[in-house]
Image (cartoon, rainbow, N blue to C red; front, side, top):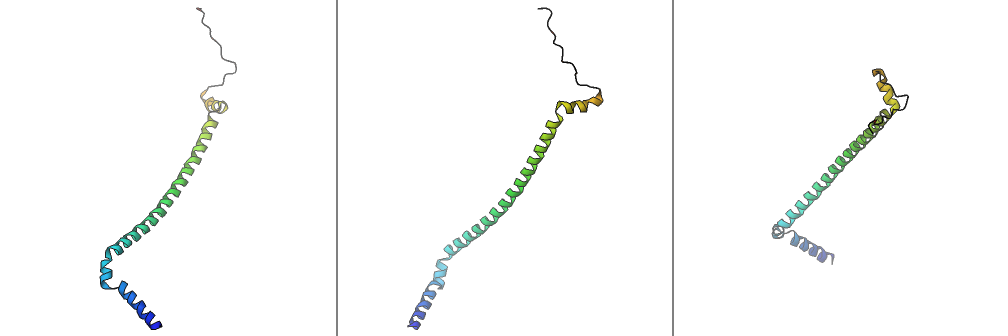
Amino acid sequence: MSEKKNKKDKTVVKKYFHHSTIVKNIPFILFLSALAIVYIYNGHYADSLTRKISTIEKSVKEKEYEFKTIKSEVIFRSKASELSKVVEPMGLKELEAPPLLLSDSTK
């Protein structure tokens, strides 16, 4: 019985791997090969895109930290007390008295 089964298996294998069957299925085999190549390319493309995105995210975070640092520096330097320290060597001083209000005498 095992001989019959073994012969049956061989005939099935011969049926599917016969020269005419292979030649008839070449377009399908080429299609599967092209599909496999596209699948592999897509995986590599996704990996490279992920790496690019992570480097750009790091760059954006660095720029964000730099922006926040410069912004806080500008806010600190634009305070009145800091401005007076900077312009003091030029001979400019902060007003000690409130400004005078000028009125129109023609009215």
